[in-house]
Image (cartoon, rainbow, N blue to C red):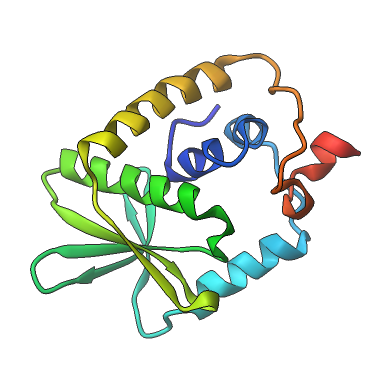
Length: 164
């Protein structure tokens, strides 16, 4: 079973069943066209930036020096999952602060030429702490939550685990 990481945080805000499947290391359909598109965008966007920083269990897409702070970036395929991207990035900011690193964040959506600034605050931190408690409960269950049809199902690489 996995420990909590940014990907699980993002999944929690999209689909709790996907979270459970991911935490239990069940492999999604690797040939899912939306998964492939996400990988392509992550690799090809922001080519001038250094990407893929590992800090502890975190894999941060982009790290750069801003005018006053370090800025970390999370690349997303579309704004469809904006909340999960913001919460994933907020999780990274919260964890970096635990390491004594003060940073700001940006959710980057290159296809839409969109950049969403993210800063950690008490409200977001409170939501993350509650999410982490809930995530621990969900992944400790022996079976995944029942599937629920949501707007993300048609593009999900795990959809055969739910609807086959």
